[in-house]
Length: 266
Image (cartoon, helix red, strand yellow):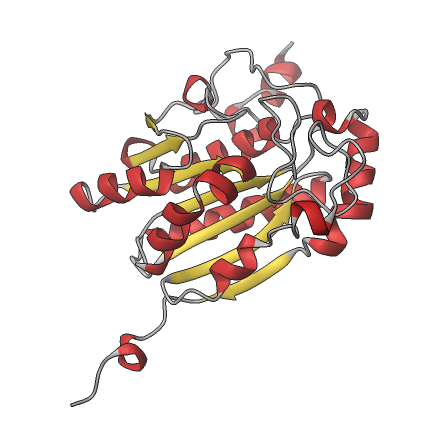
């Protein structure tokens, strides 16, 4: 018994669930990437010691109920408007860490204008963009990020360029904006990938605290229900089909661009 008590001493703790992630049962489908992303996001906020200073903005989409799971202050935004809401919060409360959590249907479709303009202004917020290439919550319809040839509820024969246009690599567009400080694309399908994604999210929050511009973290993810695949097969499909088009890694790393190159000269 004494030996057991020595083993379970706090200083011998190897792992414990972050208290920021409560015990509520998540509504996500089995194999969904959202649960993993929620976990590492919660761990980052705890490790930085900013729970009382963090405000999240949840989207319309599969993560609409994110505020039920992570113990921080939240706001709910209309569909696609999370960056606009985050802008207002950050400008009124500049000392807070403000982030949005959005899917591809929310951010890269109805919210494209709000996203691009908030980042172009260099708002000091973090944007977490979960890209599974489909509208997951509403039945698996084609999203702007759906791949060419990918079958969805609204492209039963696969996405056709002549009819549906090209997939939108919005993260590449965002990396060109002068107000963007840090732009990266990650994934969470393996332990190694999870560690990299967590490191990227942590860096985004650290940069946000330095007021150097917008930090944008895309997480390429799966939708087992929408793709009609098992969780294991969904990860394989993502690696085979999505990663070649949505290539992982940092696209911009530093701070927003200097203003002198945009200033008129008399």
